[in-house]
Image 1 (cartoon, rainbow, N blue to C red):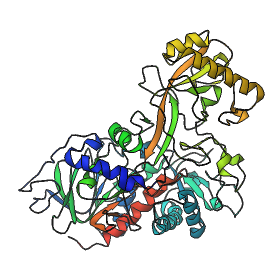
Image 2 (cartoon, rainbow, N blue to C red; image 1 turned 180 degrees about the horizontal axis):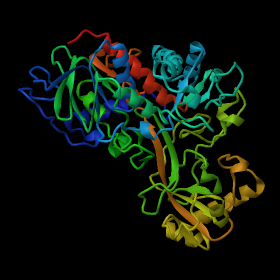
Image 3 (tube, rainbow, N blue to C red; image 1 turned 180 degrees about the vertical axis):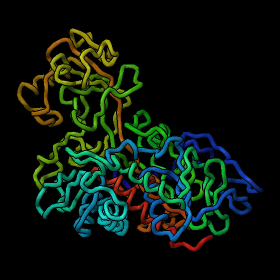
Image 4 (spheres, one colour; image 1 turned 90 degrees about the horizontal axis):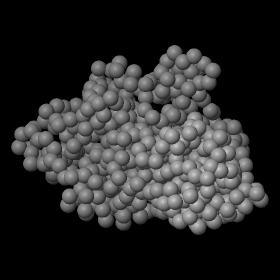
Length: 543
């Protein structure tokens, strides 16, 4: 499936929406009634709701998006009160604590907008004004973190934007004309420096939140429902932590994706058997709440994935992090349950974009860029089978096929055999097919050319020295991006393109990314639309 398809906004998502409204089956959840006080009949019906608490703004989700929104309320809200509600008992939740913390920024707003356009592609459903809002926010990111928030610049890893035509900033997509406008930084990640301040951006933001008494930070407070005025459709508040909480100016949804909801993963991406690399709590709670009050949805098929990652034989855990170096997939081949290679299976995050010339032909390069894989000249995320096998030999094991493991059989990380046919039997795949696949692969290695999928010669290693090994592999990914449609002001829209009053979003919950993805772009978006949505909500008249 193409990541930039318009289908999930109307066809695939709304088809599931009818089911979800009847019983939330499309979301893999049983229908549930929120705790209600007073005489309100439903959590989403604010006609007669008795409020347990009131704040000016309610922010749901305390990852980087929610943290940024709450901080903006504290800094710019003239003593406006904010509830920052986090589902996890040990927040911040979602993917934020697990990410590298790299943040995209820019100096040339127009050039960076063009880079965003180039990555979005010709079929993007993200309007230009939303991409411009992102570009403007990217210019603000650096001074906001280091000047406004007081992060220590000397302790940060900073890669500055460069002059046109130069690639000193190692962009993810050097093929695009305006890639040079990209800059990146990471708080507390300077090399060869003693870090005395925050070691991660979430730590920096948490410290600032703790210093503002206008922010009530409540953990273990999951969202159950949004509370809506039945006549005006305005969002009046939310049911969080079992309480009806009024939001006088607005609710900002920062609840992330649906990585850990296998039913949603299957319904909207066709990958119910995939495993998220990090967060376990992102189960689509916010999606369900917004569906019930009439939000439109987009980018439901978009994500940072997929790659076939090594698992233990019981399929309970990853044996290594496939998306960062070292990437062990160069030491063997990946096959499906039919014993055949089916894609360019050097799929760790090893695209070596720094070796791609500026404005090269993207349709000819291979590798994996946050799970986007070149297929037919385009870079979609590809649909993988739920089960595959990483096949390598003794030389591959010694080279690092399973990093840090010298006896994968004892650890139950892999099967082993002295012949390919015996190995196939243990894998449960056709022996003749696997033998043919390995033989053809070894011929490619001898000639130094993968004639089937164009894997670079420098990342080819034969499978020819027994004993042979087969490690279970399953599709892995980082995050989903689909969710409610948002406009340039961070407002969530209905299917007619009209804002739902009092409702906003930020971060990966309805992300603007709809084509290919630039590393650090989601964290940047969390900050950018965290600020935008908070400012829009602050400008609202109190309900």
